[in-house]
Image 1 (cartoon, rainbow over the protein chains, first blue to last red):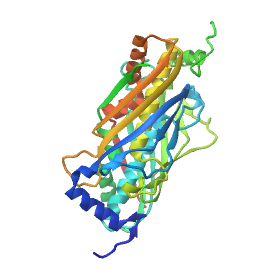
Image 2 (image 1 turned 30 degrees about the vertical axis):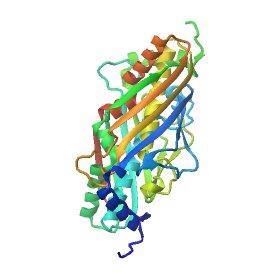
Image 3 (image 1 turned 90 degrees about the vertical axis):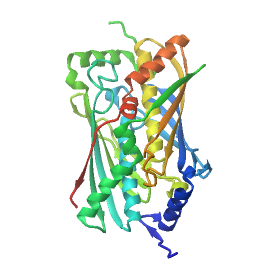
Image 4 (image 1 turned 135 degrees about the vertical axis):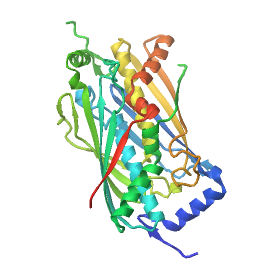
Length: 187
Length: 187
């Protein structure tokens, strides 16, 4: 095999090996991601993200947990110790579309020079506060604008932005929804 | 008016004033949240979250941006500089359900002592890699388990966990989906 080296910060040989492995052993594609969250006060709460299951085993590669703070700005009665949950949704969506774009560019042999995106989502807080039955609680809509520079034609870049939407897990979650089961443990 | 002080870290008087104001001036409920994201390399990209529109004006209360790092763990070809986008979705969901629970507990005069949640989401990475047409890209399902201690009966706590789901913006986004428009700006 001809070694393909690193493109866009991704090990191309390892990427191809991973795809080949998943094609022959589909069970290795099953992942379970996790988070643990603890309320601090008011709108401030903190998640710990570390362990996950994937590629056939519990992953032990992370030496420490990521600690993530949710809070609300002053106007939403918070103490602004972190971005708020709906802002984190925009961050997750931006990141997942970007990673999908870069991954599929790499698979096509395209060198990416820069990817920038700006996102905005409109939301009526009367939903959260139960003040308007006709208003949804979540975003009514989200807009994403990409600016991409790559060693590719404009048409190829347009196709990458398209394939990013077709393959991104968070784009799928946010546009199509996911069943969520919520349980309460006894005190 | 009898001053109600602070409960659960929330200024109860200000909360009631906000609800009264939104009932008479519904346009103040319209918010727009934003994020800007820049690709670094591979699965690593960084969002900046600061400005937003809400309560009838551009908010200027934040003195600095929140900087949020997405990356992927080693097994997903990343350098593990941050949680990955689908883990951020769990963080956002946990935080939003928790804040909704605490907000509505406060409105009901219930003092909350602790809220903890654990979340897990199952996802087949063959979707992202376009290796299995019958597999969705996003989570197939998400499980959330709450443990709540509050100055309330078990039935009241169960009701709080229910109302959190009925009112949480991120729960609405993740369970029902949102239209997302993606545009590409010229180079």
